[in-house]
Image (cartoon, rainbow, N blue to C red; front, side, top):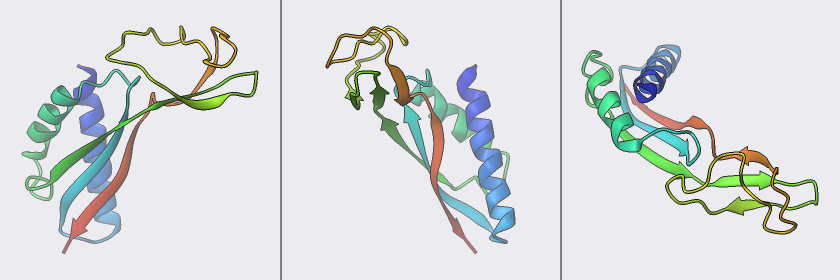
Length: 121
């Protein structure tokens, strides 16, 4: 399960930052999940909530998820957000809305990033 390994990495990173900052517990974890990351938010939350139970410093933390749009860049000069709905479109099959080039570069939207972590003494 892809969601489990990503949730584990998020928990590990939160604990690492907690240790670096010499704090006691993680209160909130804010994660950005790109629409093309192939991460199911419901499964990701389930995994995160089960993993955090194993760590006193994480067990009361809340997870906030922010879905990230897909941005492309094309050789014609177009840069911008494109709309996709529930993987109706296949990655690498997007067309530039300006010139219809079938191979624009995906600049954003396939990532999973920790945007912010709130800690407490």
